[in-house]
Amino acid sequence: MGIKSFQGSRRAQQKTMDTTPIHVKDYMTTKLITFKPDQSVEEVIDTLIKNRISGGPVVNEKNELIGIISEGDCIKQIHDSRYYNMPLNNNSVEKHMVKNVETIDGNMNIFDACTKFLDAKRRRFPIVENGKLIGQISQKDILKAALKLKGHNWK
Image (cartoon, rainbow, N blue to C red; front, side):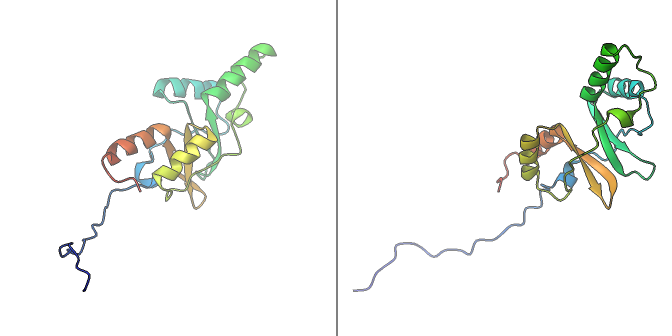
């Protein structure tokens, strides 16, 4: 006696190509407020406050990333100037910026970027291509991406 199957005929499943962008470059900010190494920390503080941002990349004249300066770097400088009784002026960004900057590849998957944010405990990562700064991804950009991807299969 043969084995009978009670399953009906199956239709071939169609593979649909999901074109929802899930790469960092699809959600990064490209209109950046950047700083120059010879700017004063006071100028940076003024720019951060006026633009309601917490920091930004420092670039040279060729738009190459050379550092990042943040509110925390500025606060440290204010603290040190008071401690050593030295005025804020004549303090350049270059003296207070973080020089060893970790970047993210624009082709990185948004979910891998989440992991990088969690591991590094950073608020933003610059994106560099061919040595030039092309954008920045922030934690807020990741949150916006997650809302757009809501309801999609997160594989």
